Length: 243
Image 1 (cartoon, helix red, strand yellow):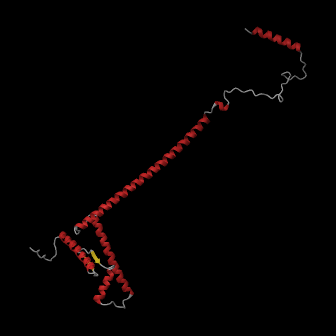
Image 2 (image 1 turned 120 degrees about the horizontal axis):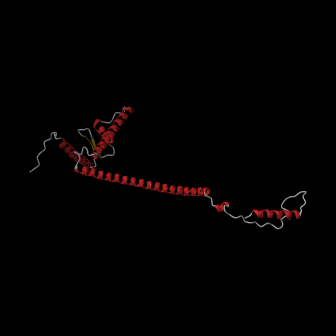
Image 3 (image 1 turned 45 degrees about the vertical axis):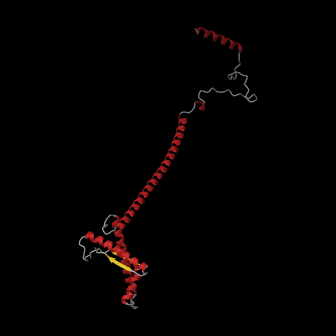
């Protein structure tokens, strides 16, 4: 049996309508590309969805050049007396439309990455989106791991520097403690406590003992008899008191 003819009317189901739009849009874009390659034709295709999203295809390098060519062929050559201001306005409007279409495409891609508005996408587009998300997730995890490793290396370096500074301070503290101990508790041998004085030899030619009486007597004549008598009496006096 042959395939029945599909009645052309608006699809009431929103999901079915979006799916049908995505499939037929991709098919139309594919046909336009094949036509431009097989027949070496200049093809320009512009599609607006019911939400105002722009889908375009152009076989040439610029859509604006193709539209200008279409305008020349359909409406004749542009008037030569068109002012520069009008030309700038047209160019600005076309640039605005181009930027708007790109902005909408980026918004659509962002919504798809967030898991929104996936109904119009085909199975191949969903697989491509899944691969893109997997690649992004791997890149994010790799970047996070590298960031954590860099932080760990930095912390280890700081720990090493702190340990070296701690060792230096500890060494200085021990040296200062030893110096203070020597100042508070000096060694008796260093300052001469408990040492017997050593007899230094006297020079023979410099110092000579004086052969005289130990006391200085001026104008007194020494009497050896009286000295002997006094010493004997003193000895007798001391003997009586001794036990």
